[in-house]
Amino acid sequence: MAELVPIIRDIVIIAFGGVTAVVLVILVRHLLPLLATLRELTTTANAAVAQLDVQMKVLGDTIISARALTDALNDTHRKAIAPALQNVEEITDKVNRTARNVSYIVEEGSRFSHSTLRRATHYRDTVFRPIIEIVSLWNGIRTVAGLLPKRGRWRLPRLRKGKKDGKE
Image (cartoon, rainbow, N blue to C red; front, top):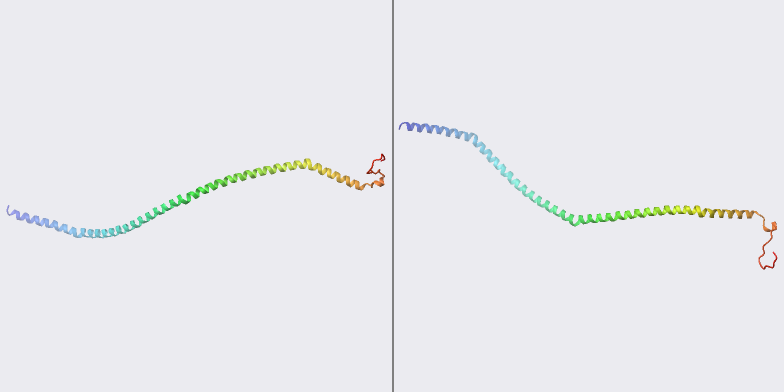
């Protein structure tokens, strides 16, 4: 057995040496390119992470600016726009009330105008037409009287003005 031990030892050394050689070949052929690719990928990833870090800082600044802008807009709305909007609503209400009042006044004026026209027509028909007819009759009488001969020609008695002595 003593002779067997060195032989087994040599077999084991050769066997493990072959396995080690095979492992080394696999490492050299396959694992080393993978490690080189992994190193390149890690370098690229580190550069991308650094760039993302810069972009995140810019994005953070942008978010802060956007929040400040939103706060300023809200403040402007609260201080300027909301009161102006309330004033516009109040003015609109007043204008609407005034428009309703003007509409009411126009309606009343229209009613009054129609009533006045109706009354004027009534007065014209009941008062002025008879007056016009009387004036027309008077003008007719004057015209006819102008066509008649004077008093002396018809020998109509004259009316005396003066003392009354019983004679006419």
